Image 1: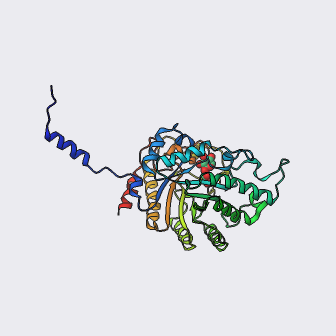
Image 2: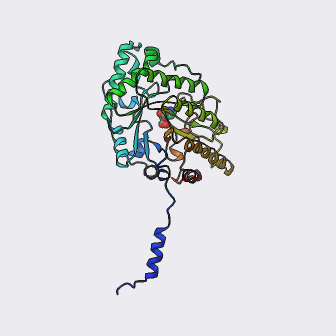
Image 3: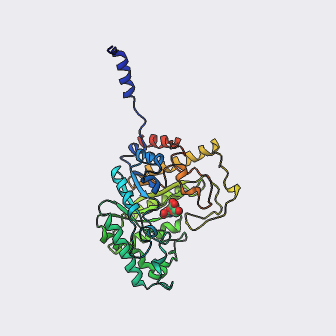
Length: 369
Ligand code: XIL
């Protein structure tokens, strides 16, 4: 028997289809700035399909959470491991993402051999410069034209505005940063180049980063943006201080990127921990108050603070080119394990089931006003 055709039913179905869908985050922010996420290996290799889907549907930019750090890319001198980084870039391209690279020079997650000789003594400045050049050239030229911008140097300034006394700095001194920017530009002349750091709302750090931008520009070196990591808490930093920094960077003639945004609800074991990955503290139950769920009052306060930051970003969308969350869903976040391992945090825009948190609709609403 032929199925009976009911025009009325068809009209109803069509009307249903025509209902406006709630927009996605990336659509809402399309003409404002890129909205990005960091991706772990599990996400871009298909092991974590939930976060992979959330990333694909909601974000327009990606950064590698770990796989492009120098200890993974060049574990032994001259031996490169590009498999994961290649897959990361391919995933970004397949999903039409703005792809940034993180990071070419960083004192942390760097291979043991980088700064020392076979006896464990510091190498000369010439040797270190040559090693950095060879690493940066190999990596940035491999992804030339595909990675749109690089965090060239990560975390070289301390909270008091002085240079971090890392081994890299001990050997190369202040030349470390200009050299890294020069090598990166030579390897990929069209790539954008960034200086990236945490606690950038602190006045001393803000001033030092502004000075760095000026120095690089005076020397004719390319720098396109300052990355403000944005590992923030419920009571630090003040939104106004964050705003002062982003205005200061824009005034110095570069764009601003919020590169590693996450908002922890957990108590900090120490007030000024910033985001120094080496700062870790022992687990204590009192430091993990929301292991069984987040009380509504705390969730509401979190939403309101995250919304305040996005209001600031949208207000300065002419200066900000990208806002990247450091992870997709809450259980992906490094904040569950840093600075105290084994805690339950709620730092990102999507919950542990991959659902958008209420703040996502707030951001979409803010972007449409
Ligand atoms: C973190 C990753 O999220 C962790 O998985 C890893 O164990 C340590 O590094 N600043 C940065 C990022 O620039 O690369 C760091 O990422 C977080 C702080």
